[in-house]
Length: 375
Image (tube, rainbow, N blue to C red; front, side):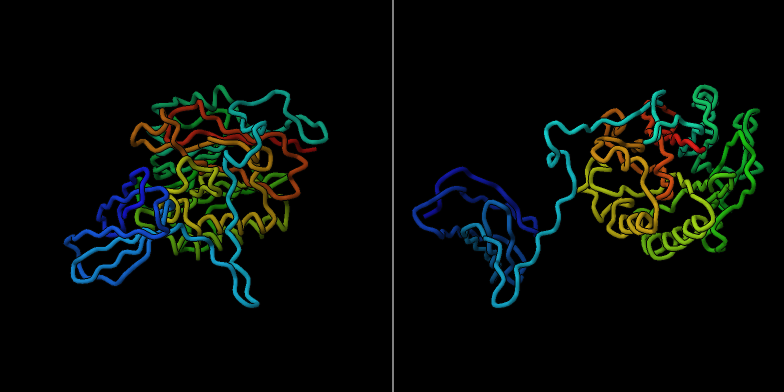
């Protein structure tokens, strides 16, 4: 006799759709059988949440056995039960009165922990093509926001082809272009001339895409980066995780040994589940949210650096800096946090604020801003 109750419809991994009743019946185990055209396969077990199903497939016949929900197995003998994986932070796990807000504009009252006001304002923006950005933004951001430094990524333009329209009289410009036309590239606008500017990581295989600019100032090193994307089908994941991330972290550590570091840019990773709208459907399937990329960012932080935004706003939600152009994602606010200001641990005392300026258009990313106070 089939158990009575609400009907539930599920499909196994072969895509075969079956229907079974949910609820309590007269016995603990009931069986539902039905013939279907399937290939001969070994029996397998699928846990669907409501109950466990054994799928037995002899001679092109399928038999479903509806069993009691399975309980976690306890350890036997001296062994212990396997520890449950830690659940990552989510909106649901926060207290009802938790503040999930974050700043999208400069707060004129922001200060360091000891009450100092900002002395420098640094912005970063993946412009997704500097020529297209220039046509859309028309230098409005630099003219209105007036950051002391603006770092840009994905310029997609050779240095000798940078249009005059993107050059600003109040800023010195530095460019690092990819050898491949219309690809990658980084740029730096700065009101104060740096002590020194270098390009790349000093490793040929990493430096032909114009991904890193390092500028030395009196109190700190500034590094802007456009970190390689793992690509469609994750074709560059091994290169990204095993080679680029290692070399880039080493570069920052060497700089940090001399003076504090401020690093910013499009890092092409959503570090935590709270850093993208749909973590479950993207995990280990989409570039930017694989275990390897996330671990690479964790390793960077463990080397003596701080995600400035999460340091100040650990509970912030929907704090995206990127929205795909597809499926009207920005209007629906389906995004990712891919853009970061990462600072040396010892700069926390000088941190005033870290902002995601979501109202600014002109790219599939929005600008982010860091406010610091140096004595």
